[in-house]
Image 1 (cartoon, each protein chain N blue to C red):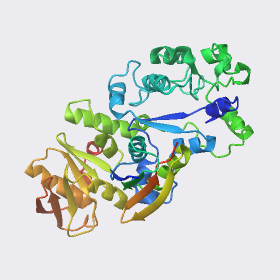
Image 2: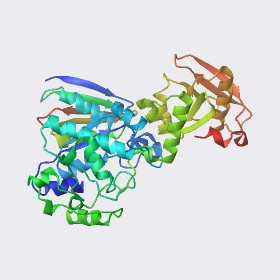
Image 3: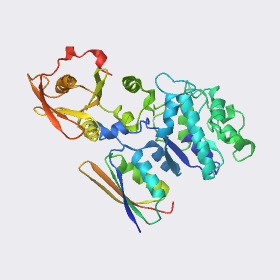
Image 4: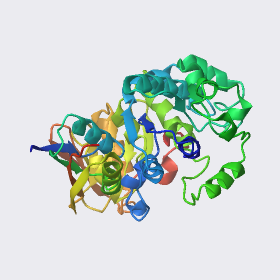
Length: 76
Length: 330
């Protein structure tokens, strides 16, 4: 299992979702991705994207105007 | 949503594609502005996909879209919106996508007569033909008013179960939504593109004129959505944050632009786009002072921060409202 970090700061939705989507395509089932953003919209959009594409949200963190989503790549 | 649901009802597997041009409204300014914090920030495409139980593929077309916006074969709508070319471009991208991903045909939610430029009886075949999709493009909401497409002729789709909606009214769609048990949907006719916005289009044209070049980067597109834009001289423009959220967003650009903020009074963060001279900075500083709490003060201390991190301080008298010509405001 690999864990990677994606810096999506300053990007506005849907760009953090697009970057997440593109990164996940290069990862394996079971890998984890930590996406760090400044757009609060990701707290809704990335979990929705995960639900419809079969990935699992492990953690949602917010603080100091940063929002982090940790997800586990699913089988799609 | 209704087009997808209509096809799903026939037992056909549907997946969604959403193209991101950079000009999509989708909550951007809501995400930036503090006063909009309470508003839901859902992305409607994702939300719709979840309601329908389908996958959604969001495709970044920012670079390729430049040619659509800068050289629209069919021209612009009321503002800088190249709607017909945009539709042709997106259907063409969808055609490529289905070929690469093993899908059989494309559906869109188009309705004859719904939009004055891009959704007319005359434009429907133009979109099909110029996108290269031909009769692989099915419009389930108005299919019965159009010649049968390949999916209908081949019996993949039952034409009798498709619809014959025409015109600008959304009542038939609302009735259909009700019949499907859908009671929450995005605003019909909902201006989802900044290019249809008069003020945004004016800022985009101003940007091109000032740079003497009809080109843009994503950051340009984003910055046009934020703040008050004032151009005191042809060679520089000020972007003035209107509230804390915008100020925080603009902070992210301080390494790329000269910026200003008031030291002696509470005031906004301001970015300077262009090449202001040292003298210009005094005028810019007095404008910056005008938009802070020191607007009535005799003197305001303004910090100027350069891209390399160096700083200087200017002491200026805030400019009076009557000394700011209307032409400065973009």
